[in-house]
Length: 167
Image 1 (cartoon, rainbow, N blue to C red):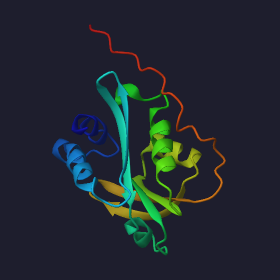
Image 2 (cartoon, rainbow, N blue to C red; image 1 turned 180 degrees about the vertical axis):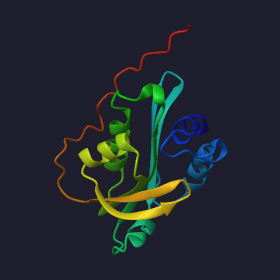
Image 3 (spheres, helix red, strand yellow; image 1 turned 90 degrees about the vertical axis):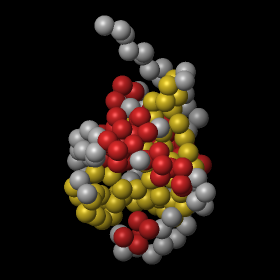
């Protein structure tokens, strides 16, 4: 997991130092005991190509000056660069939200994470607030409970990811 996080969060727009990016794995390990911990992984054979996880938490609701409810925070969603474009992020997202019943869902992303923002907007997320981060402004996003305009694809198979060819 640290390897995928290092591949993802050191790239623009995040630009985190490698040790901080890889620390996602340590945070995840610490969050496994949190209420509502939910995790999903995208594997191809023994290769991890992506992961997502979240916990029940109202911190982002409070930061966005909203009344806390039965909130769930999608803490991390990462897809390795070689696995992008195959629907991995969408399926990880949908699996986490399907397994995490809540009144409202929250996440934070970078304001310039174009692919992530496009995914979140297509899945019904709305901007709630801006929040300063170490490597730039972050966008707190919200998704309320209710009928989704999207079909539940949480059981859908991920397309196989081609193995890199050796030079």
